Amino acid sequence: MAYSEQVIDHYENPRNVGKMDDKDDHVGTGMVGAPACGDVMRLQIRVSDEGVIEDAKFKTYGCGSAIASSSLITEWVKGMTLDQASELKNSQIAEELALPPVKIHCSVLAEDAIKAAIEDYRKKRS
Amino acid sequence: MDMSRNYFELLGLEPGYDVDLALLSERYRALQKEWHPDRFAHRSDRERRMAVQYTAHLNEALATLKSPLRRAQYLLLLAGRDTHGESSGQLDPMFLMEQMELRERLAEVGDASDPDAELDALAEQAQASMRTLQHEFVSLYAQSDLDAAEAVVRKMQFMTKLISEIEAAEDRLADY
Image 1 (cartoon, rainbow over the protein chains, first blue to last red):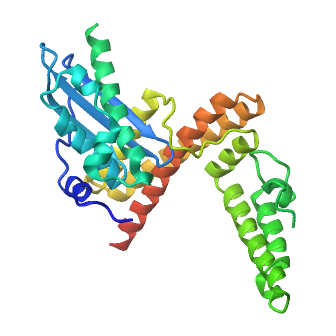
Image 2 (image 1 turned 90 degrees about the vertical axis):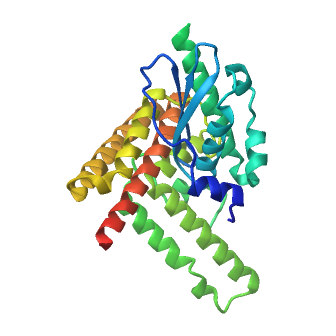
Image 3 (image 1 turned 45 degrees about the vertical axis):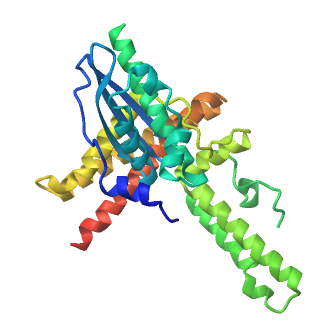
């Protein structure tokens, strides 16, 4: 299957790969997985006291589309408020990366990951 | 060959997770011989096509029943649960964290002072986890707790992927 140029770009030069200290109370961590392909994804956000996402990191063990989806979403969420970030939809990722139908679930995984990270952060702060 | 029969019936095996693999191979070979397309070379088009179809069906049955993961998925399918979908479902966060750590260790195996030993340790750990999951599946399936059995199968899917990646890493290491 041919990957789009956008996917290849993110796959070869992934943005924001890394890890944050998940004990830090400004950090929210989302862990998700796709059983069908065995992919696992960790997405973390650092949130300011004003509720703005200052930084985002990810690590994904999976296919090119899963890596590209998580790389792209970490770029997008930087500078967003938590509410803005939680409104991101997988279809936006799929469109930006020109994902074929069989790879749509990779973008769903990235959406689930950011939602899980936001939820983890909110739980920590409540 | 009756293709509407399930794989266990087809191969004359007791339906269940604990499959006698030697018996499975034996039954498979006998049926494969019986339906081998070469034996139908001089028969009608229709019979030849059927022999090809049967053989494919038989191969699928073997592949399904041999694999620890696919066998569990097949038993769930027979119970009306399709676990082949893409939906992520509910996953235990602790399990995902552990998966992440195992994948990280595997990715960094090349940096270990003794990559072979590290890879062996990782393979052993993954195999042990897979065995534990298989035991869990057997008892949950026996109790007809299909929700829990499905959750175990999802974990098996990750573990199977990890094991295949460990095997790929072993092959790469052996090539040096």
